[in-house]
Image 1 (cartoon, rainbow, N blue to C red):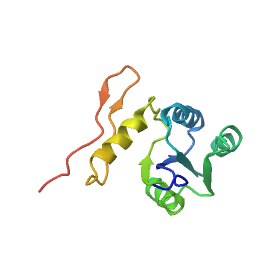
Image 2: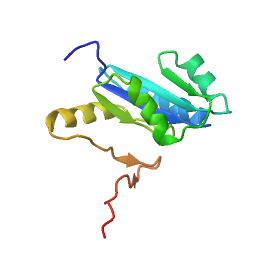
Image 3: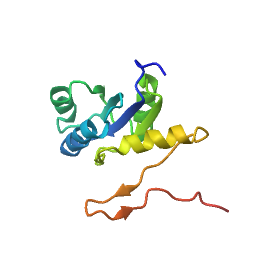
Image 4: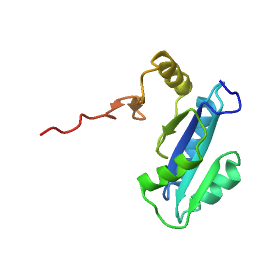
Length: 139
């Protein structure tokens, strides 16, 4: 594995979520452990100074600042064009990553080389599990 390539690109699309985004980015500092990651924030024309906060408080985060609200899908697609990580992690700005969560995710992907994607267990602040996956509808 090339040690210059990040193991993951964490992509966060933000629209007027400055304080939630701050908590999310802070949580990533402890969740990465020994893993090299890049963090990409796409700011969707926020009016709450989110982009400025990222520039000032998280200078190592790659900020893509859109002058218009691209929406979630187009903003992620923009981030995909610059992401260099082996894996892509889509993270909502209201999420906080738990310590060693990425260790578990990377271990799973390495142990299951045929897996194309994985989803994380989501928990509420009180520890209860939140649903994060659904079946596709059928006829």
